[in-house]
Image 1 (cartoon, rainbow, N blue to C red):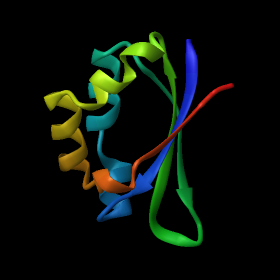
Image 2 (image 1 turned 120 degrees about the vertical axis):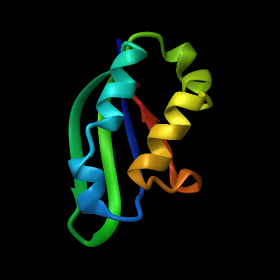
Image 3 (image 1 turned 90 degrees about the horizontal axis):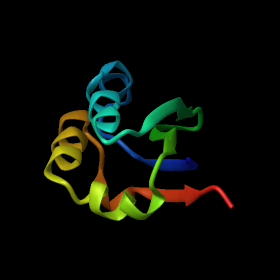
Image 4 (image 1 turned 45 degrees about the vertical axis):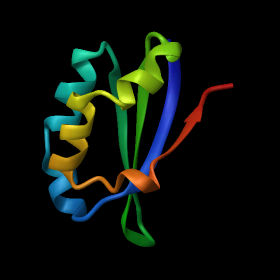
Length: 87
């Protein structure tokens, strides 16, 4: 398992926080959500901490239709996604 931090901007932080979609989709890929974070200085910047079982599959997972649909549902701005992988 590899810990990954993904931070990005969203259209509506409250909607993003309330949505169960990201955890459902991540779980379908075997990814465990470990934490959800907000930027107290930016209403639209958020992050998640996840445990990824196969880091090599992360790029294809992120390009999957399921993840794309979940991101759209949650209001994630895809061009702002930045991932940090545990060293």
